[in-house]
Image (tube, rainbow, N blue to C red; front, side, top):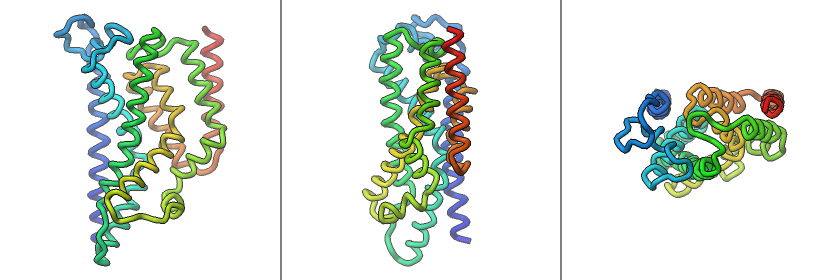
Length: 259
């Protein structure tokens, strides 16, 4: 009964976190684009950030970093939920035996810190691409860059590195056992979360680049990519992963032909 209650609490916390993140993303995506982007009193922060490509102020950079961080956490929370639930169960069992064990929140914090680092890299990439007039927050990339990103992501689906990282994300127990099991200290728990987040980044980074294809504020595109990431981790074997890769390659080739 105690384990079941803990499971409900952890699931509730993760669901609340995901809902808050998605609500924030939806709020940004629904912002009206009617205001003048050069107006400092504009009510549309995304339009203001797109006013002069590549010429962000420090405040605009931080706003984009926040947007990317929230987006990454919202997209990846469903995928990491099984691992955090396993950690919470182990922590409860250790507590019942009288052994001190760091709360599962430290593992989750390490995982999300890893994705915050990925969000920082994505923010820098967006800044560079906008400076080169290659993308915009609303319209995304042109057909040539978009097609190239689709093909690159599709090819990565077939690589051994993708297979290795995805296997670590699909098998929480194998990941933990290969690293000596869960450890009770805060530092060890945080580091374990960071390492697991690193494998998930290695698995999903190419798919995350596709956020630039249709615009980083395209809510349907974001949801579709989040669903693809989750499906890859839930569907066993490599067939789904390979089919998704071929679909991306074909879509990219059609985009380049159309260009």
